Length: 369
Ligand code: OSB
Ligand code: MG
Image 1 (cartoon, helix red, strand yellow):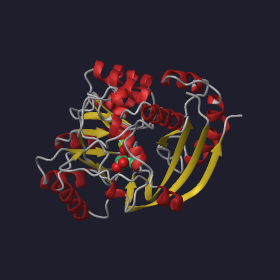
Image 2: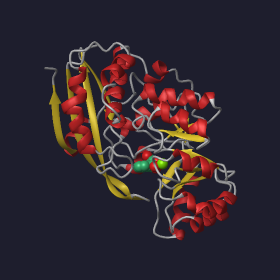
Image 3: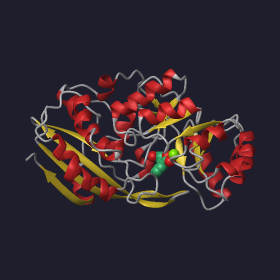
Image 4: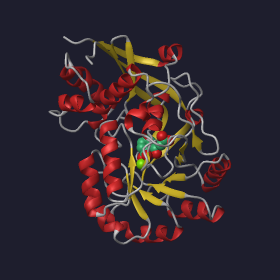
């Protein structure tokens, strides 16, 4: 397959909620999209980078420039018959797994559509309905938190993840645990604590959380291993794992006992599947994280979540929670905490072109030299 044309779009959608984490507040979603074209077929992807490098180092403008100036030129005229062929073209560039993932994910969608097969079949997926939970941002008060948690449990979501940060942690977790003794609860700190916060984590350890997500620095597996050794609750790594090699090192060190896999963070589906396979070899469960994606990224996440090791509920909840109108035509809606896989070739969704045109803030087309 030779890529004949690419289109990069940057869309801005209003978010239906204010999403606060330890690293900031989002009120809108900037969605970078890539369309690859070959022989009359298109494939789509969505990048997971944020407008600023606050989650990891990559950021939207920088990644889009890298795509235009270096990554797309590197595949120019190359015959990409396999994801390994594509990976070989991108290997000279260090890091930048989110930007690379945009190319790789669009390649998989395009390939699956050429073959008229759903992507999960090419990936080797086995699950159909995907169990999901919700990731709830930091709320204005404990009362508001109890309200929003109760509402999502009633909707049937299978796990509640609460964002925490220093000063907004033990009290809110205790209140939610007190109100819902049986609920599957987790907390995501987005790297806002230090290993010296051990006493706090020892108290959180008493609350029966399913896991504590990314408590410590995004690049520090050693401290995570130190903390994991002193807790009975599993640590789940998110930001710390950008590649299969990161996953291997983390598990060898016992820096965590669960991994949040985001296909857009680890460089694409091939890498995500390798992380999944490494976790399986260590007997470690994984789940599919999210980055408030539109339907394009959401559909990719669901396709990946069909792999057998995705045994914990993911973050890919109903698109209507996030957006009044989505970029794709198919509704992606959970029922009783299960997301049905969108049916059809590739990622199973088609673009809502009229709406996309309305929300597109910038657009570049690229053709091989
Ligand atoms: O840490 O998982 C995270 C969103 C943006 C950046 C980081 C994270 C998140 C989420 C949202 O938790 C998950 C979702 O609902 O898509
Ligand atoms: Mg996280």
